Amino acid sequence: MADSAEVPSLQCLVEGAAFVEVLPDELDLNRYIAAVEDPTAGAIATFLGVTRDNFHGKRVVQLQYEAYVPMARKVMLDICEQAGRRWDIKRIALAHKTGDCGVGHTSVIVAVSSAHRAPALEACHWVIDELKATVPIWKKEVYEGGEVWKENAESRIAAGAAR
Amino acid sequence: MPENQQGNTLAVSIVFFARARELAGCSEAMLQVPAGSNTTSLPQLILTAYPQLKTVLPSCMLSLNLDYVDQEHPQLLKAGDEVGIICPVSGG
Image (cartoon, rainbow over all chains, first blue to last red; front, side):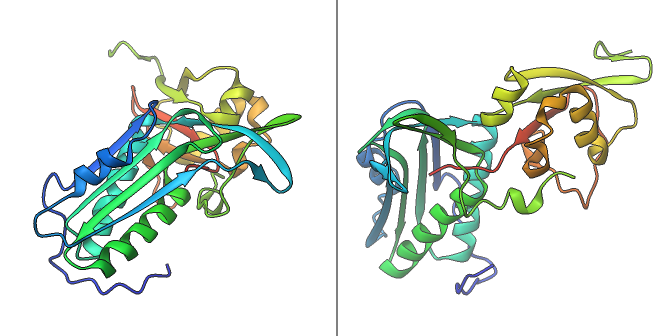
């Protein structure tokens, strides 16, 4: 697994420092920034995944997301806790929308706070990559002329397929 | 004898998502499996009950009670377990 973080053995998130949501509502970035604000944090890094209007030349009408909600939450929480062990971060929030997600709308938000900026930026990057690889959420792409269930290139699901 | 265990079988619940859900025609169902079955036998048990999953199941992982099944560490199934059919994911 590509990862350049040093891992001090006793580093981890304090209880309650991870905030995870899977919900059908529009995602509000301010909610997740508020969830990671901390008096000792000088840096907050965020990532938003937004539905774009095209994929390989096809015009996308909307994306539809389906989630195995209790498992998605569990895997998302585990990702947050792993990030807390790999990087010196204070708080982390991770949220994913279910249901319709039109062009320009946000499907996923990551927010991470840390004392200094490098850990927050690196952890934020790692978290979204890990979400796309392992969290049991699926997107159906609706485009002009059809619809298809997508499979992330990052997905490690195919690699460990059921025999 | 527990309600969901009769004779030499026990009942687990299967939850389906995305393409697997569309092919199975349902989002959840009960599956009777032989007592003593473990996660290794799950793919075949699922295919027998849902042959229409033949095209997708080889690329799916399975989950057991919200954890990914690790086929290198088989686990015994028990009555009331929840098995998830996890097609290649596409969150984010």
